Length: 401
Ligand SMILES: Cc1cc2nc3c(=O)[nH]c(=O)nc-3n(C[C@H](O)[C@H](O)[C@H](O)COP(=O)(O)O)c2cc1C
Image 1: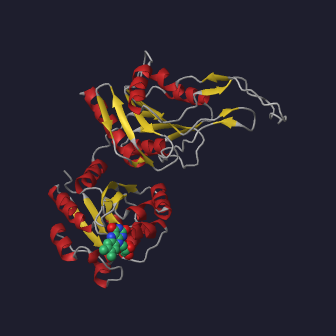
Image 2: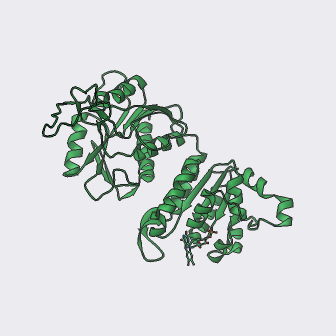
Image 3: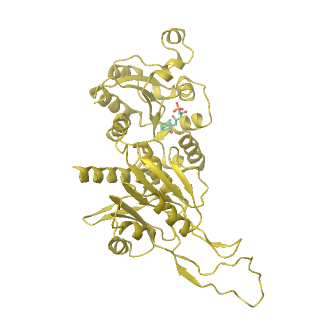
């Protein structure tokens, strides 16, 4: 139940605004106090009268209102809530808040608040995929704003793809998680992320295209759920997850040592794309190009981090999750990796040419365990992180039951 929780509910100008009414109703049923704020554009999609009737509160919609300012000013409005939700969050509102604009009541509230903000973006697929929108999302994400959705699906405009607002129940669940006791509080997770670099000589290395986006999203979600996270990352161009203990490494050997010295842990999620091989003998000086004389590199296998932790006899984490990047026979390879490595879940990604999984913002994954194969649609790496963290959390709960 959400008794006594005060939710500042901002509705912006998108076609999905009608779905916000359902969420207002559900929040009220759960006992939350809902204070509605609407942008001018939002009033083209739902009326303040219906919002006010469902919320049983007046709707705030003007920045320059003498009465409102005297009763509950915009700063107080922004600080008095336990949580601020933006449902739907239009592309325009996301852009406005990402650039720190404060030219109406809703955007001023976001800029002025120190309360957690949860946004449910909803827009046409091209608006969502536009690099400008993605840049704004990244900026807000880095500033601690949380997102739920968007999902893939049919849109009001008739197109299909990412941009459809999360359903009311999904947003409600997210709000309930926020208000629940942090589910993973007191639990230690080790998460690896990004690529490794295996040196050839002082300037050259072998590596791969991993961006570290998926591992970062998982670590962020775990922190949100209250876990203590040790985040071991190879070289990436991303800000490290807020609230995690970050260990930066370069080679697979360094990652192996960092993982083992970070144990014990309640669970380990190995997202990193660890190089399978390294150069047997790295050169101390830069190799010189000698026309007609190609250098030959002898490779040797790197230590297997996933198998080494999965097969620990003592103090093995209760849950060990491995990631597999496959380009063919995806499911068969995932099942055989699960067996061979001895982990509890394998999340297999299709990284074949054209998928843009490695380095991209979306992932198409299958989660394989001993007794289940869950095939997921293409979704944002953030959404996949959410599904995976919930799955791990449920498994840990079942183990303790
Ligand atoms: C019929 C119609 C539907 C629209 N739907 C959306 C939408 O789903 N998402 C969105 O980001 N913008 C949508 N827009 C554009 C926004 O309403 C417009 O950018 C507006 O300025 C947003 O104002 P806001 O910052 O108050 O949200 C739509 C516009 C029209 C005319």
